[in-house]
Amino acid sequence: MKNFCEKCCNYAGQPWKAQKWIREVMDRLYQPTPDGLCGDEDNGQTSAWYVFSALGFYPVCPGSGEFVIGSPIFEEAEMKLENGNTFTVEAEDNCKDNIYIETACLNGKPYSKTYLNYEDIQNGGRVFFDMSDKPNKDWGDDPSDAPYSMSKELE
Image (tube, rainbow, N blue to C red):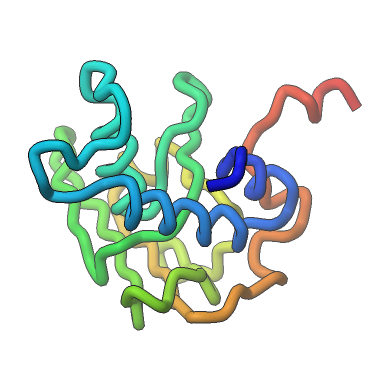
């Protein structure tokens, strides 16, 4: 695979590229076998990335309170949170070929951000992704849709 940073695409207004490469990494580098993890397991970090990414989002920067959206592999996943709330991820038309997010909604409202806030997850609710086999180059492409980046402060 190319020397490629999957998170950069969400920061650069091209989240469909992140969706493609995240799904590629999950499909090719993780297998349900004794040696199915790529590289050093690093005390659970590698498998934690996979579990988060399989849900459709993952923490990039600890402490930022943001989870960058990728490409979920489940049609539906429900998380029972410690505070008693439930957060559900639903990915309609999700399959091996439909790796791209066509549209998204958070708690019934259109959502174009390429990240979820920690508070949104903790409050419970539902994120909905309509999946497609073709990239939607308009979803999440606005600079205001990108996750936090310190480089924005330098502008």
